[in-house]
View 1: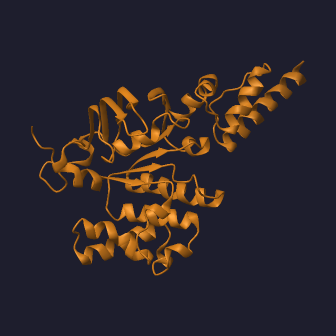
View 2 (view 1 turned 45 degrees about the horizontal axis):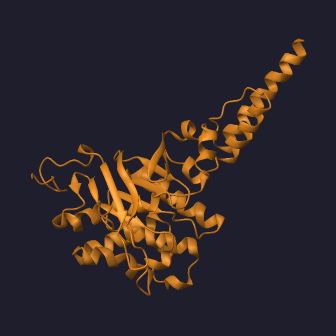
View 3 (view 1 turned 90 degrees about the vertical axis):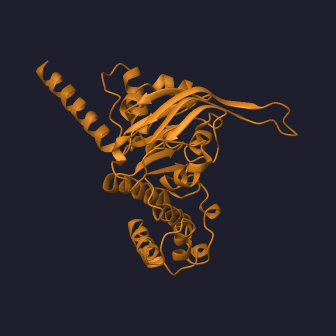
Length: 306
């Protein structure tokens, strides 16, 4: 089998391939002592993620979204079918290190990813293990900490930081690996509102300014609305896939999948049920306010004409 081109090789381009391709992906957790039979999660799942895109994956607990995330950097391997990241088959052990360098993972509890007693040492941990030269590590660590707005905390002890700050340190540790894609598995689940805002802004900036592919696993509708593509999972299958406004406008489908929709969409949906002709595609508070303003102005004009 022909090996994929790697960064630095002649003819390589980050844009030459999809970031992730899952083809006929099948996965089941193996039987264990207390579990006599294997537990199937996926069966013939197909999915492609474009390089440079920002994709949010939604679904109720147990739908398979976190299991899918772990397939993208070979924490879990397919039981059948295949997962390829930047042309590399995740089941190929010879490519494991490169797969994990190209696709970084950030989990919901930052304490599980922080391994050092000093912030800058923690961020340097992964590049050191990749064999990056010391002088380059110094540059990468400084740039990563500046990117997440934590450079002034570089000599601090991680355990003294807030949850949001810790999560940004965890993200910096991944950035220092210079990945092409970052998969975030519910990274704001344990954070307060300000922490969630800080982490999401960091993620959006990485996507917009550096072209990093972002795959965000979340159960927060507002977070998903920031993405340029939303995938809804149910019982190990993809129930919906499209632009946020197109997916969230399917309110009945979302409810059937055990999910809510953004508050703005829910408000417009309830008004539509009362007979008002309003679109369901205004996701942000500003867009929703504008829709309601235009509707009320139009209604007032019609009454004046009557």
